[in-house]
Length: 178
Image (tube, rainbow, N blue to C red; front, top):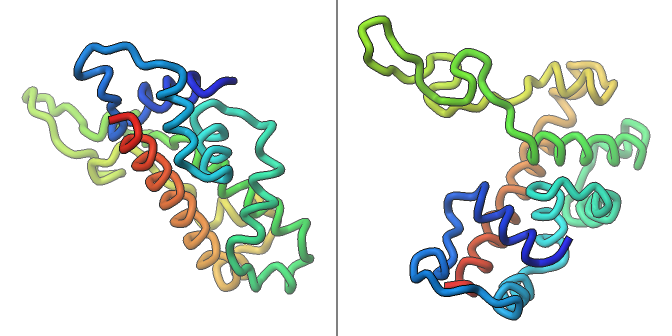
């Protein structure tokens, strides 16, 4: 999976990334793409590869890096690195795969009988749903109350960190390509 495939996947699935070649009609060279990817960190590149190319080969290294990026106080209480690895893996899965709303099927609106469109009441016009705390705790094998009390804050912080890393990487790539 080369640099071109990362950029192609990003352009196809990320509306905030529009290389100038699309606007001007010029062909982008491999050196342009390599230069754009050279602007991001290795962790950011791994995150983009994992999310947009489904490259599971980078997963373990990405998990190892994310273990050092943040402080996870509940890990020592609940069994150390085994829980922490599962926790980060689950957050990565949640971050990288869209969870389409069941009611609107990801469209963010529902057609009325009268022909008008209204925001979906279940997802509030977003088109996505998030996993429930109870569902996450079940997947981790941690009692719900323990998860809610000890892990939920860390989960939200890690998810925000991943979102920030992705946004920063896309912004750097966009700046280099345009």
